Length: 408
Image (cartoon, rainbow, N blue to C red; front, side, top):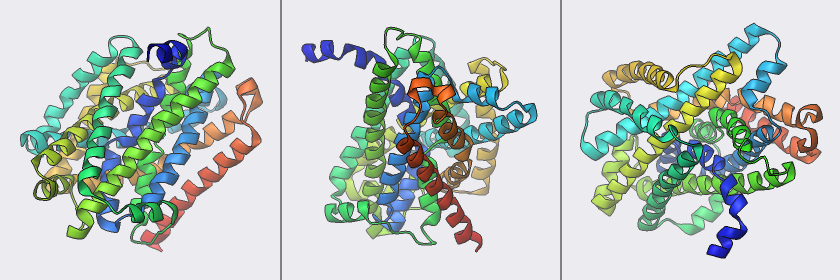
């Protein structure tokens, strides 16, 4: 082990950004879409998770390459788009995407508090605002401390769902078949687009370039080719783990809930686990949800800061930003709770909205990483650009299909 650590010391010191980004792919929004998909449509949408994970891996890789070239995506957009009105409009839409993301993360914390401690949702919305203290504690030191803390968060979520899948005893033949067999109906289109919206996340695409750009300041000894190699490994490992956790969510929901009826709420999923697999399984579920909410909330905060700084140049204390974001989220969430709207439905719709906002960072990433003047020796190969364009068209195609299914 010591020899391994010594041999790969540079790689291990570089890794971490992918881990922070990967949390965005296993946040409470994913819980909503994956559990909704598995409990309602069995294993039918498993192929969507694998496809979305592959697309996310490519786009996060491209975003990180921008950082290796010395750019963050928000700063580059401001530099290339000369029209101030367009930049402001772009910034506002980006903030909406981040707020939709943060709403899902906030909801996850609120629901987890209810499941773990019996705190009513309404009270939980105000108690959950205290997560700002956790964030500030984590980021008051070097980023390396934050990256190491995320190992714990991802570990809790991952091990939790490994356990849930193990005890639910899924049908492995169906898993293999539905991993490679595309099945999509008008009824499942909303969930499918929600899965993509919860997987290829706008704020994660924004923040990866910013994280890598800042990381390179501490790794000036690396050549661009070395850094690209390390980034590729970091990105692949982190997002493969995230993809497997997402698949495990849907597999667990299909195995545990499909035969007993579709689960319409996260609370329902938790309650259903108790008679099926015992109280410990329900406890693991709730702890993993709380970890997902808190950790993804950190990533969302950092993304919001990167977008605001890069697009507007307006710097705001991260404490203040977090409090403002939480207050904005509390208002609609309080209204929704008072109206009796289920949190799982809010999660699914928030992730579907995110899918429509994916083009905001997606299109610039494809354009910029294919530009040799911007990327220099890190410019995309033609095959990479073509693949990115095809993936982008698939995402837009899903959105068009959703609109047709809903209104056509």
